[in-house]
Every structure is written in structure tokens, then in C-alpha cells.
Length: 21
Image (cartoon, rainbow, N blue to C red):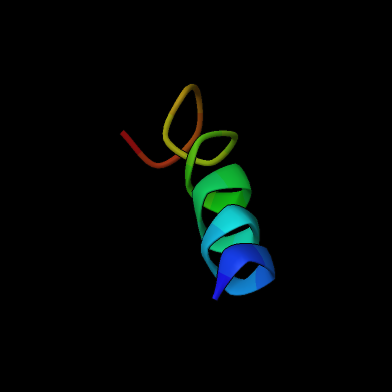
């Protein structure tokens, strides 16, 4: 649960900060 939740947050932060939105 800890590793799965950290990988989901790290991949969502670097994506929206300057690419899709």
C-alpha cells in the first residue's frame, strides 16, 4: 500500500506540471 501509493503520486506530479494541462 505504501509503495503503490507513492508511485501513483510521483507519476501524477511530473505529468500535469507542464505537459497535459
